[in-house]
Length: 261
Ligand SMILES: Nc1ncnc2c1ncn2[C@@H]1O[C@H](COP(=O)(O)OP(=O)(O)OP(=O)(O)O)[C@@H](O)[C@H]1O
Image (tube, rainbow, N blue to C red; front, side):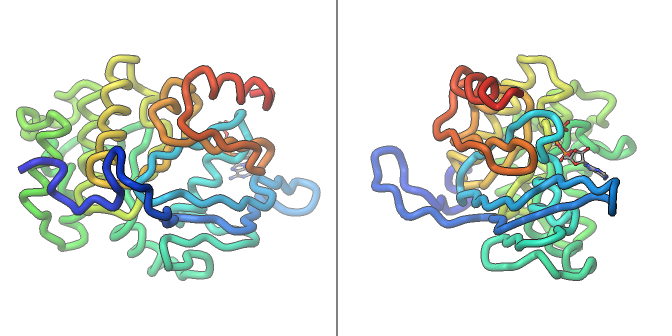
């Protein structure tokens, strides 16, 4: 069972003609205010952005530019003050909490800087937890291919404290990928890792995009991490301030320097 055949790819292979890209998630005229009156802060000031299906996109920008806020509203974790957010054909804005919770559970995967694994559960139970809670049974072939691909086969009976940081983050990635979400949001996924484990984790995220057509949107401060993405969306002061295709560490550093980041 290979990683490649586990899910139909939604992109043409190298050398094939590029089909028109569809957006997995998009924001239209999104504004987000925190607080009221004199204390009001405009975290997002009219953001229009679309994230292609089957692409790995990094969101970057100076501290306070609105990266986390944008990710939270795209993932239905926070409401907008104005504008619309779409996940495929589904509009998130205006949905009630119960529907949003269900949508996040069924269609969105999360990977956090702090791994967020349950200490009392072994790796296998952590990976399966979201599906267990949703009373869904994982596709065993898909499960095996993910576990194998992420190099976790020998670690499944270990609890998080018995795993290295990189292994814990790979468990978190397996947990995010198992339900085959429309999009995986990764928030500083390498923030707690040394550079070798970080590189491993980023390669695996990129492989899931290349080989299975998974859509990944990652917030990061790290230009090296961003260079693993297909594209970087730059934020500054709550607005989109740039867009870099095929980013390299140098092109990202250069763009950030121009933003004063
Ligand atoms: N809950 C909140 N209440 C009030 N202001 C907030 C809240 N969350 C964020 N902000 C403000 O909104 C702006 C954008 O914050 P956000 O956390 O999205 O930026 P960021 O780019 O992710 O920053 P960092 O890189 O430092 O994590 C900042 O000015 C921040 O202080």
